[in-house]
Image (cartoon, rainbow, N blue to C red; front, side):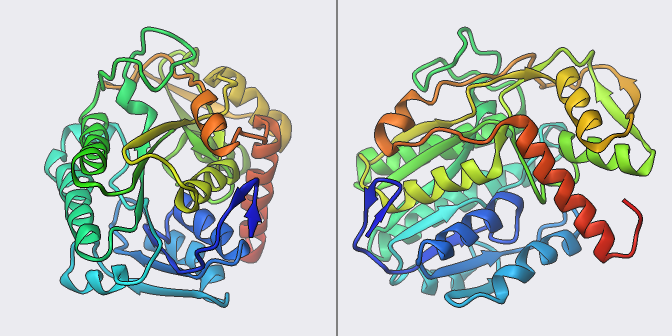
Length: 330
């Protein structure tokens, strides 16, 4: 079977950790669309409301080929799910730059220790492909833009440090233990069902509910916003395509834009003005991100296809649909 130019004959299930999360449920849904059975696990850590994750999960639970268990990655019972899968898509993690300064032990446990446990378990159970979510945060203030994968990594937050450590573990297991690992450095993912703490979702909520949007910094920070559908496609392709062990790729739109410009797009799409509440820049936030997708384009034939405006239109439409179902004005 050929999927986006990649030929695959292995129809065994794919295990998705963090399957009820933002990127996780989109990726699981796409794999199901492509005909792959999916085993989803999620521990529902309380970083944001459980009800949001349950809403993400509800559509998956109705689909053939999907089964789900609520569990922590490193629970002893999780190993059973690794016995006959072709790949593990490891998306479960503790997100967020700001909280990582005060809650470092949590980030170490969920981002580093859990990844190490999963890699060891994969070795014990047939060595399936392991695709692990990394982050553009590993670059810190990059010296060159667009930033390529070989650039120096100098994360500026405890969160970024834990993501880099987890990524380097995957590379080490690929190079030294022969495990087929792929690290994906996601750049500021947005789209329908985005986490409620993330900027575009907070902007959309503020625009529709008349609340204020907390803007950290002057809004001239530049981000490489990447649509979740494109990110899910890159992630699913990495799970089913032959790649060298220890591969690492940027997953980015290659169209960086200022936060101020994003505010204008949200206002134009929603037809509402966003009231701003200005704060000083957060410790650990960088002034700019912007990646090159040349390596993943060569390896997987992947580039982002969805523009910022189209992606925000989809995100606003999903927000309004959800508000309508809840009986609230949007």
